[in-house]
Image (tube, rainbow, N blue to C red; front, side):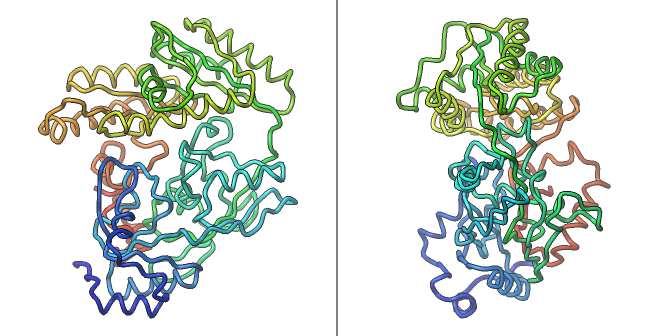
Length: 467
């Protein structure tokens, strides 16, 4: 059944429903909401709406469902899989007005927060109370919590503390028919019925619109230590990762960057330190955290003794908070720097961490076969490697016809190594055609049936996840 268009009369109905100040038809605003950080895609919605409370979202969902109009929820627009792109036009539901931290409960170490709050803003708010919310994507300064919840985002701290869904206790969700539900309870243990909280987390806005979340918090670690470890071989750097864990140390972050990832970033970051020496092909950025400096120094000593077995070079110790911030700033800017260097496709691969060397070698071999250059970096401690395929001088035929075949081979390699095709970016628009690599038809049919149960008219974020 085709979707209904939004004409002048429909816009008038929306303005009456939500108020004219919350219904935007200006082309500039619509175009702004038609792209994110995924390649160079542009899908301009017919209208952008900005409701301010759950009841207004409910009214909007009922209206879209009744008129069979597609609607796509959108956070801060920092996604990398096209998950919030309105590919069927219709309504873009901006959650930017849902920007309140409702409560920080210091007695129970949890918080109730709206989805439009920026990740870093929330982190800093809880840190003022000596509490800690670990999920910290590279875009934490601009990405919203709702987008993090919808994509089950990770980040550097995930290696020790876990990804976003491990911090979600309960969510207020508006379903496509306008029903408002809470998915769980504000408790640490819950064996009551199906776990809808974990189903909604990572569902990429295809099952419901999250309007509040209750998240658990941790006590804030008082100390961090950070080192940057160079290697003459990128595969050796990858091999050192699992060896550190086998030695009994769990870093709070363990990031991999090959040489070009750092070089591209140094080219665009002001006042960047000179981090690259001749022959260094990759670096591990390793952090430990806790409350006892002596314990952290002993952990660093263990880590140093391990990485030296894999041919590490001269290790850089971040002696001050300012130096720590500089190193982390470089790591978080890698994605933007690569995008500034070339048109590219970014794939979000993940394998068991001991298989990282095979994954990296396989990616480079596939690149040689298809004639493309790749820049790899990511959360090595999780086995999560971001693969940036640079267009460079590839022809239209190579880029449009051959690179998808190469990406398919990369994903088949991931699957053969016990991994999968997305660790934290989601499937969205750009990876959906590869889902049959990791799921058989029975599994995909079950997932489609879940989607149909929640959204029988298919209005909510259509065209995502499923091939």
